[in-house]
Image (spheres, rainbow, N blue to C red):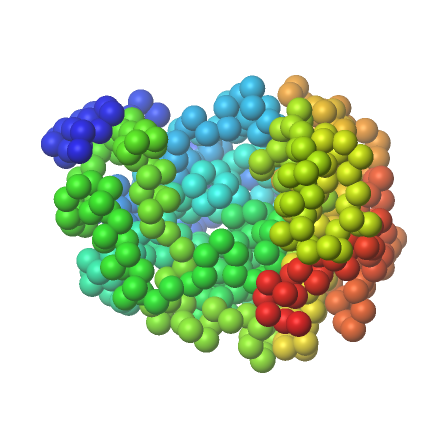
Length: 556
């Protein structure tokens, strides 16, 4: 096979590194501009910098593991490489390896999140770093900790995205740690050779190993930042939510956190795009897939010898897919290796599975508009009817009556969110029934941000991040935020901070957020306010989609 940009031989030749690959530098500090001063952590000494919120310090780009190039590619995270002097943590750490062309400016998410170079660090195999936002004035404040896991389909994304600018959230009395991890094929490769060289016999699951290592870093180091290592919440949105669920399933993470927040994962706590597989089966599948992709057997040494830039300049197959995505699409998924995951641990609905771990779970009202939507899209009424019949049999007509092809198209997108919300609710009830020691709270975000064709995009996938993180600012490029947006951001971020502190989002001055019990209570965020409800504005749709979720998961 001849690749579009390289032959197989050229792939393994010595090639210069990508222009966007960089090596982090260290600045020696003279004075401490933050009240915490210089902190000794794993690897050396570090110093933070002030932020736009008085009293909140940020430490950017702290390494929690070694670079992942060379022999460390596809290996379990290795110990931090020590530095001399004091690291002034005023610069975002490199993004983990990913294609820089994803979500370009001019596209929806490029214009939403990725247009400001101040939040877009270089890309390299030195991406295992994290950021700490802390309001602590002394190291002994013992503040609760929130480890935030970014999304990006587990193929892109990074911890310094501007919607994660968490200074106002941290000011509510929590320490927020935003974590990076290996994405794409670098975070998923399960091969026999990977398992054989791993001291614990783990087959792949590099991404989860990275996140567990970050949790261990928090356990061992966060007290210096004023955080309490015994009061940790993990949470994430989209792929970050999937990864949060994976941490709930992994014995490696047990005992390292007490609470979890799962945002916009489409399937609730049920298995989503693929079910976990046994390591022996998955390793054989991956080896075969790589051999077909490269037209030759591939060793671990071969894969490590591929120059970093070749993953993004080489195209393969009839559809000329970037090598990075070709490998990513051919492998991946949760691997049951008996260490990072077991047959028992991946079942979150077994009796007592989440006892002692409090849970918040929810989604947005328009998950599909930016994932697969087109504001000019239409669907012929005949095709719409056939599609709805396949999903809902004959019961959909009253719940989803379409007046014209445009309306039909938009209703078809709305069904994605409607099923996601019911998957959240059904799985939340199952957790509560089987783990009565867990407090479970559910939400539904139905507050379209202003501007950028809000009439179509609505409460789009990732919209709630601006609100839960309280990250909206009157900065160039951001949306024309209104009073109701700032009000709701203050409300939602307060609920979140309270949950991180106690496992209960409620507090003075807030509408009571009821726990999942025997009823169907959840919090609806809409029109700038929080409403305690038992249904969305469309109860017929709720029932229809609940029945579908129950049937899909063999629960009725």
